[in-house]
Every structure is written in C-alpha cells, then in structure tokens.
Length: 263
Image (cartoon, rainbow, N blue to C red; front, side, top):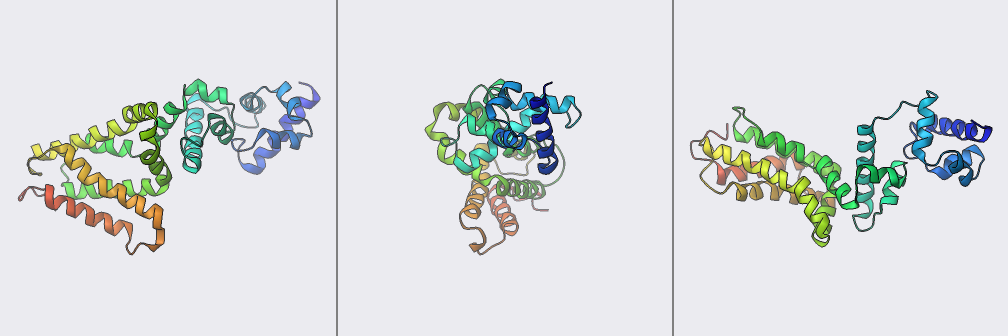
C-alpha cells in the first residue's frame, strides 16, 4: 500500500474513532481529513466498501457481514424516506446516508420500489402482526389486543413519517404499490385476519367478517399515530390511555356476550 492510500486509511480510522463508525461519514470528509483529492482517494479505494474492507483487514473496524450490510441499507433508507418521501429520495441519496456506493445497494435491492417495500416490512408492524396471527395462547383478547395496540403505537411514534409516506405516496406508484402490498400490507392484513377469525371460532367474538374487524381495529390506531404526528403535545390526551379506550370500544362491538374477552 502506498503512502497516500495509507493516509486515507489513517484518516478514516481517526473519523471512526470520533464518529463511532464510518457509516455516516461522506467520502469528501475522508479525503479532506487525509489531505488528498477525492479522485486520489477513489484511485486507491473505488468505493467506501473497499475502504471499509481495508479498515477491517487492518483490524481498525470489524468486518461487516452481508446481513448487517442489508440492515444498514434498510435503516439508511428509512431515514431518507422519512425526510423526503419516496418521490424525493434517490438511491444515490440512500447510498450517501448509508455511507456506501449505489452499486452496493443494487446488489441487495434491485430497485427503489423493492427497497421501500422492504423498509415498510422491516420497520412497520409486520413482526407484531405475525406474532398476533400465530398466537395460540389462552389470554383473553382484551389483554392480547391491548398489548398489540400499545406496541403498534410505540412503533408508529418511532416511524410515523414512514407511515405518512406509505399512505400518501404508495397509491401514485403502481410498482411500489404492488411490492409494498406483497411484502408488507398484505401479510399484515392476513396475520390480523387470522387472529380475528380464530377468536370467532373460539366463541370469544361474535360471528362476522374478520377482515372488517381488522380495519375496525387497526384504522383508529393509524389515525392516532397520524394525529400525534400532526399535532403532538397539543392533543388533549395521552396515547397509551387512548389506546386502551380504542381497544375497549372495538371489543364492545366484536366480543361475544359471554366470550370472556374483557377479563
């Protein structure tokens, strides 16, 4: 390795010590820290991945497995989409946010639509919905649904901007709509429908369309997240308390008279 390449590595190492990682450090800053032109840096290291690999080889940072890199891209995309929406975010911007090359993103995600759908799958309530859909315990729905609703509110507060993006932008991008439904919305609906149908079969819920019950249950929770996003502390209620009221209201219509769902 020549002196300039080592100067770049040393500069990157200093930035890693200051920032905690190389992820959010732009190439321009690394070049400036090293006292070289960006073109000089790229002649030694054609991508940030290549530089990170050299840092790992020298024991300065740990090598990053492929799954970690995939998660890194998803988290960077979540931040970028939350700021600028789907339309206003390019893959180049996601790459800059993740501190990697655009080519690396395309290795994991063939299009922006696929990446956005995976973001919705990973950071949305998919895991919560999957757990609910596969629930076979004996807890009454009041306890199970209250726990789910509180967790969904917490997730919504952390990712409310992405929820707005999905609701406002997905309808205008047919390919995004298709892959987002296949990867996120569709599975969520299926999991929740399965739970609602199971409760009716157990006699805890009145007979009825489980899909309608999913909308009746989830709709107010989504509205609550959007209200908090829009008005924040101006709302005259606490989200957690309101969640319990929303669950109770839902059960008033769904629960069988002697189904034991309120205990």
